[in-house]
Length: 154
Image (cartoon, rainbow, N blue to C red; front, side):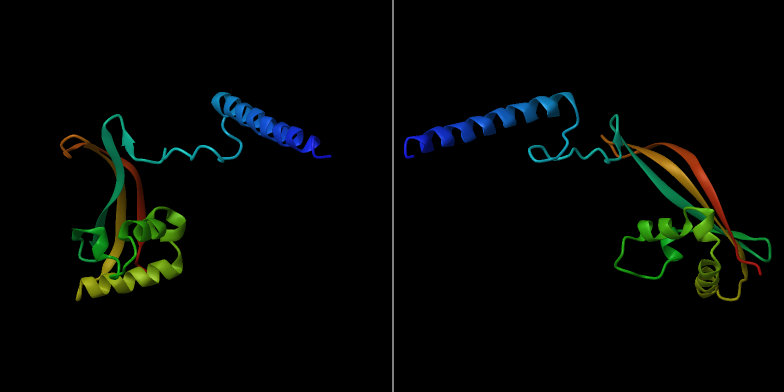
C-alpha cells in the first residue's frame, strides 16, 4: 500500500497541472467561465479615446409669471451624504419616476422652499452628454441625451 501513495500523489498533481493548462486555453479562446484566475476588466470607465464622457443635468424651473430660472441640480435636493448626481438621476432620469405623484409633491415643496413667493409650474431637466479632454480637462463637446419635464401645476 505504501508504494501506491507516491503514485497517487503524482497523478493528482499531474491532473491539476493539466486542468490548469486546459483552463488557460479556454480563457484565452473564450471568456473565462469562472473568474478563478483572472479578475474582470473595468470596462465601465467613462474614458473613450482620450476623453471623459459624462451625462449631467441642466435644470430649468418655469414659474407661473412666465419667467424661468436655471438652477444647479444639487439645489433641488436636500443636503445628504449620498452622491447627489445618483440620487437626482434615480428621481429625474425618466418620465415614470419623475412623474410619480409622490415625487411631484415632494418637488413642489422643495421648489417653494427654494423660491419663496414664486409659484413653480414645471421643472425641465435636460440631460446632456459632455466630452472632456483627458489631457487638459477642457470640455470639447456637449450633446443632448434626453429631456424630462415634471409638471407641477395641479
